[in-house]
Amino acid sequence: MATRTIKIHYDCARCPGYCCSYPRIELHEPDVERLAKHFDLDVETARRKFTRRYKADEGVEQIMRHRKDEIYGSICRFFDTKARRCTVYLARPDVCRQYPNGGKCGYYDFLKFERKHQDDPDFIPSA
Ligand code: SF4
Ligand code: SF4
Image (tube, rainbow, N blue to C red):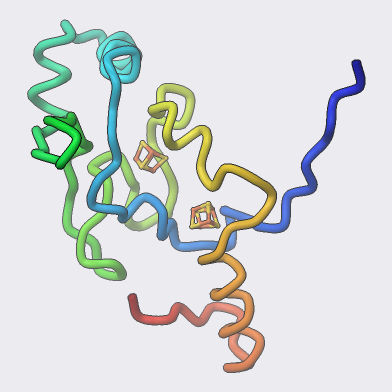
């Protein structure tokens, strides 16, 4: 069976990392285990250091801890706020691998539109 190739219409290298500022970045057990292995920690230590509990309507989730960020206020603790990139790319959670679940990213479209209309290739709209 032929595989369908999705054309990608966004460039994360030109974006300040908006999706990493989502307050609720959920981790499942394999994600915590992968991060634990990456940092050579036991799973419970990784869970404590990297995640916090969030009470959702569907039940309690483990979500990523955040750090302060000049652009978005707060962002994933693994985001390098100067280089604007993920520091655990190979060990990142599944949700980060899947996002934005297709060939288009709504934020990137918005960013591109504003940069064009402000005539400034580095413009960042306030969140
Ligand atoms: S918001 Fe979109 S373009 Fe920006 S880093 Fe995330 S996926 Fe990439
Ligand atoms: S793990 Fe990496 S890709 Fe995922 S939210 Fe954090 S900085 Fe972004």
